[in-house]
Amino acid sequence: MIIDFLGPNLIELFNYCGCKKFTISTVCLIALQVLNRIENIHKHHYLHRDIKPENFLIGIHEKSNIIYLIDFGLSKRYKNPKTHQHIPYREGRALTGTARYVSINTHMGIEQSRRDDLESIGYMLIYFLKGVLPWQGLKNGNEKYTRIMEKKLQIPTEILCYGLPDEITYYLKYCKSLRFEDRPDYDYLRGLFIKLLGTCNSLYGLNKEMLKFDWCFDDPANSIWNIFNKKNKANNDSKYGSAINRDKNEDNDVINNNDIIKNRKKSEVIKLKKQLSNIAEVNDFVSNENNPNYERSSESGDSKKSQKEQDKDKAKKEILDKDLIKEEVGESKIDESEETARDNFQPLTQDMEPGKLSV
Image (cartoon, rainbow, N blue to C red; front, side, top):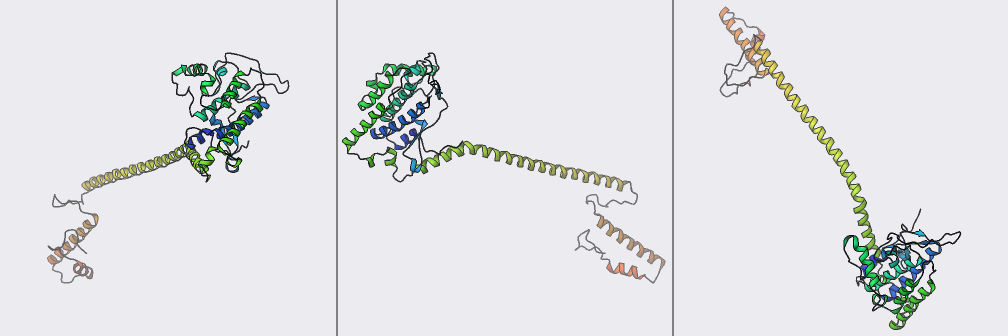
């Protein structure tokens, strides 16, 4: 299913203008389009049942002067399209819709019909003109809806619409006077706002070019789209970006865990090698102790000599032994190998460090 990409809703535009209320001309323009939308839905034998500013969105760019109606999750068919039979009148129904804007009959548990959608539109228009409704801010737990209903019943239509044009009072009285199966006179209701719009034009000298929504005057450069696009992007990032970041963090956690395992394995291998080397040294020491040819260092404080040093010491001892033997026998001649060994031999001096003999 393909749907249009729409702009901000009316409550966002209401807050964007910053005046906490719309002008009469803007409310009239809104009312005319909203009545057209709800009449079209009623012609297709459906009720919307959730009229509120959040469900009316404007188009983007060249369609920014068009108001769209969304969210049909609570919609219900009120008439059979073949037999054109209206649904029966019933009581004891649960409240359906937004309590701030639903009709009095809906609060009382009466089955909704076309009159209830129109009454909800009336409350929404009053909210735009006054910026507040008398039953807003009531908080009393489970009795909140009951208190809202009582407030709506207590306040007469004239008091509710005090300070507003008479057309708003006529509109709300007409909606409350409709019976359950009555077909509303949409032309009459539109005529009220057309008349009110003409009155505004004559009073303030407005022409057709000046008949624009309030947010169009507050946003001559059409920068509102950038503002709401950034806002929607931020909301999407906060909504979906957390899942993406969570997946990335999970991947990083897996990588970090693998690194930890690798490092742990490396440390275990190093530790094992150290243990094996220690065991090898002990075995060598034991084998050398048991070997009769093994000689300990004369000085107890000296550390063990390396194999290379031991070989040098052994070679030195052999040469000295040969010299002693030759002196005792009195041989005059010395083999070339013995002379080479003697010439290459460097006796230990005070300047030389132990263990650094060259042969």
